[in-house]
Amino acid sequence: QVALVESGGGLVQAGGSLRLSCAASERSYAMGWFRQAPGKEREFVADINWSASYMDYADSVKGRFTISRDNVMGMVYLQMNSLKPEDTAVYYCAAGGTMAREMRRYNYWGQGTQVTVSS
Image 1 (cartoon, rainbow, N blue to C red):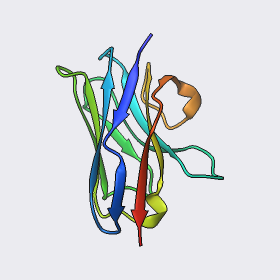
Image 2: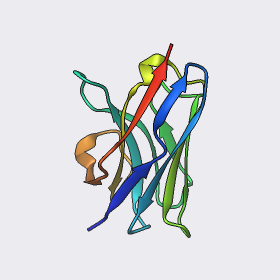
Image 3: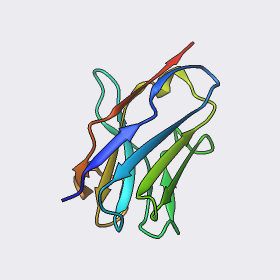
Image 4: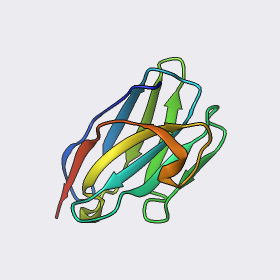
């Protein structure tokens, strides 16, 4: 059982930055970030393995977003730079046994944090 709590969402102007945080009750899991906009399917954003030696990104965010983790503090982060209106969504962190792009590979999910990017 892993409890996940996201924070750091908010309203930001296009071109701005936000850092999302995810506090995890257990630390030795692969972690992912996903997002879901109204009327859209939840989609993969980024993931990271347990040791932070490998990271993966969706093409839509590559070069703009950075995933990182601090296992001592039990935290996972998503630094989002050069934000675009199409980044507007509820962002969720998730924990699983291995890093993956597919939602079904993750066993535990947070409740999400809203990110809104204005034009």
